[in-house]
Image (cartoon, rainbow, N blue to C red; front, top):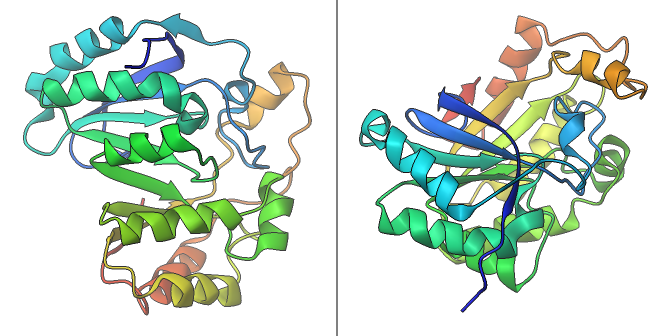
Length: 246
């Protein structure tokens, strides 16, 4: 029996519609092992900070919003990178399941240990962020290898755990036709991928870097044109049945 620990929470979003099916309570957790150049929440990267929140408090919030979830909604854990706190999340996920609440986990898939494996078994739907299939470009974009992320995708497929593939389209970094095709070829046979979500690159979090005293390293990279999004969607549709631009 795991001892319950507090969860480090950065912030919440009620009635979220972009992080899983239906209306959702989105819990943004503190701490991330990636340093994505385009991160919209750079203040969540450090494991220091956040508000230590009890499991009881998060369950209370989720249950209070349950009437709004309907048949498709629920709670989504995002970040930051939720699996950094996998051990503490396990008893929380178990409690949420007892309350009949659907759980999504938005993860980069790069953390792996016995706690992450158990957490994925308790997750109803994984939102798997694959930043780049090319490992060298992935390291340039995030500071880390994509090897474990791709192994996590394979584990989800092998263990019949449904997931959505999420792909941020960053001009000059992840929008090359060859890279999208390579990702499609690698995952095209995966039956557990319910949908591909293309997430347009945006600069909404750029101002946070200034407040943190850090440079925004993608200064000058423009947001996607409609044509870029159309091209990416058409490429993904060659490999996957459901493709959506968010």
